[in-house]
Length: 287
Image 1 (tube, rainbow, N blue to C red):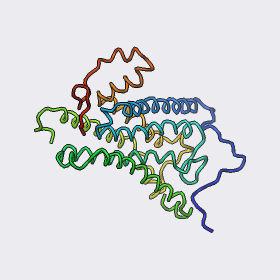
Image 2 (image 1 turned 45 degrees about the vertical axis):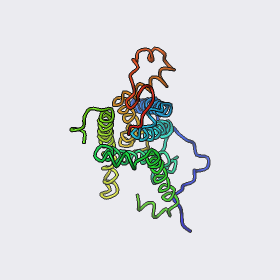
Image 3 (image 1 turned 60 degrees about the horizontal axis):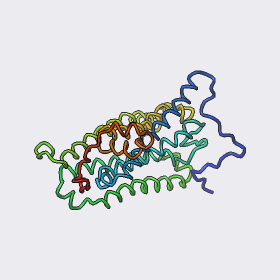
Image 4 (image 1 turned 90 degrees about the horizontal axis):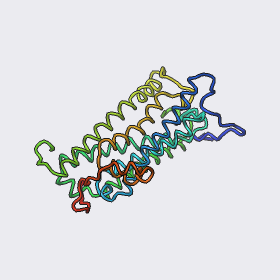
């Protein structure tokens, strides 16, 4: 009989915390995980709400990609309350794992970043064809496909036999315009997002390659003490922070729809400015 890559929980097992609180380092790790999860939710969550509540932002393709990654980042932040605070080990052998359902959120982010780079390339270098063929429906379908592709592969992987699962382990010459400014803004954002993504993910990739090929990579006790996993999940804080830093329209929408309602003083301090791609209060279609 084939054993599948689904390990049932041990009867009577108790879900322990990720650290034993035997040293000051344990307290620092636990506090860091709480602060990190809270920061990810408070940064990425308002970005999601702002884009969903702002029609002027939803009409622009680049904000659809931002919405998708911010949803992932919010869920990653929420997942840290489980993976970071309790004794969880994903992969093989799994301990209190989620069958990689939570860690696969990072895979959705990877695919979204990839498609976002292609989208910006065609929007800038082949703008005429882009405006004709790359509709909002295409962009939404692409983002949905990212989720479908990643989680279908995960489903297949989880139901593989256990033995197989172990083995598998033109801006310079354009005249000034709102579209040109939007393209420059989106390029700047995607560049910083990709750089931060590579900086935070490359150490984890290198460690995985070393473990699979050489067998000498670092092994950690659980997800809370896994330095490389912490760096990878830190992307959930960096990405929405870059979005808010690089997009004044998104920043204003976030203050207006989220933080302005929580803290009215924050709303008064922000001077309203016309959203790029709008005319007389009515949004126009800008990619």
